[in-house]
Length: 198
Image 1 (cartoon, rainbow, N blue to C red):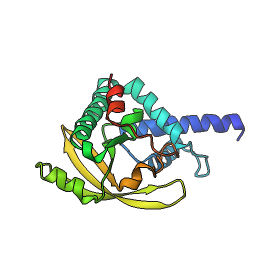
Image 2: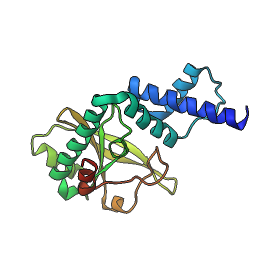
Image 3: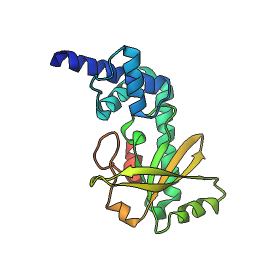
Image 4: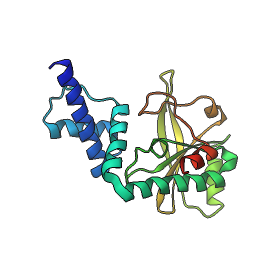
């Protein structure tokens, strides 16, 4: 396969992956890439597009085909984040992920990073206000190669799912890697999220 053929195959694979993510509401890029390989009849040794290329293809697909539903869902994710960030101001919440980049589908939830001495304090804060939450964990990878499980508080607000990863205060400086970009997460504070919505 020539370099140009490889490039075209990766473009086709990124576009098919984006279509699957958007239409079948797959949130895991890796599984969507493998499903796209099968759909396109490409061999298992075909080079996969990187996550940035897939993310950009998702954004483009949504711009072309997502229509008002896409715009409304992205807006709802950001509005829910603003409400949660306002309520949780003492935990220094920051929005990350697809609601920042715009690479979301109806299956995506808003992702926040928050900070507390004790992770359970955020959960108790919400429960004391009558907000039902579920406790989970999510694994994050750091630039030094380490992985760490972080408590995750999950809730529903205004028809939108919110996942709040609760880091200790060192997490303000030690930023985990965004699995899409491969670089430390771009974290948006309340003012930055409000600016996104203008």
